[in-house]
Image (cartoon, rainbow, N blue to C red; front, side, top):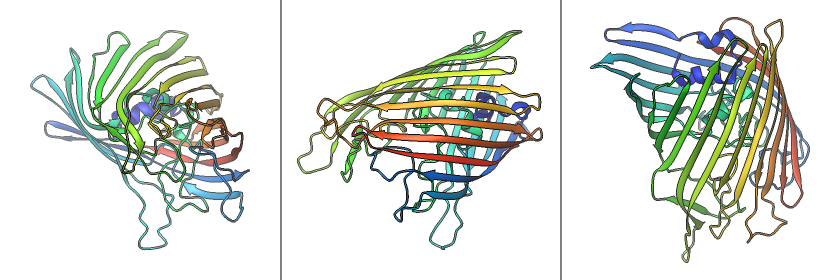
Length: 412
């Protein structure tokens, strides 16, 4: 199984026995080819309680006709996945390549001009040796906040849905939900990068890298405004972790951070783009004792926004907004091998000193999730989740939605 799929399964501590399985292994001369991935689909029932304007909120709203109940068939937070990894040992180097595609299931293809997006989240080559580490060049999961999403229990389910294309009134089909993204952590995303990872020193390991700075979003969060985000150097991201295991306990502690130099502002003939450095850091831990698991996570940043990097990160004058958040998650494995879990997460976004207190900009997104994850076979997991999402603006108005989902995820 491809490295990041393995991390996703093992990190979420949910796939149980499936986490140890490789994909379809094919010897090919000097190479070993691993064909791997997953297929998942979920039935979703969603109820939206309000139809307020909360800019950058993740809670869903009633549609234009006032309908509050919507349903859909969708891929979960972890997209369906087809990956091909090749490995070989040459000239005292471990050499690897990975290419993967991520299709979805939420588009019915009723019209010929509608196409389901197929993502390409991984295309990279890496080389190295256990004695000195490894170098990766290409596109892969971002370094900052990667452990936050890999330890989110909704990775094998649905979690939050935002405005996925499977719901009434949405014009765009998507191929994954948002899980706990935006309600406790910022999305690590899949980024072009050149990264170095150290050897594993008795459980300690670190990664540093240059990342692609092109992350264009509406960084002001101003309704109807045309905004841009110029970045004139590579992003800098890094993380360090320590994993441990004993007779009674096992777990992992990590820290990570990112720094981007940006120019931000409205596009106009007289635009002035103030230059600043956006920074963010986090800390997290996952501890397991017997059938119990506990994960805690916290992040804080300046000029990085909320939910996705740089979403609503600056005001229209280019001033940086502060943000922070985190999540707490507990799980327990029943005698039936079913893993049950409870999670609470919240992401906060502050106004700058120049902004009015009654702004429609989101003040916080928060989420409660209860889930059950059952390994029906070594490769197949049944999943059921309930999530309650709230997005509240600085003006005090809010949107709330409740999502119930059930389905299955198969790893190979």
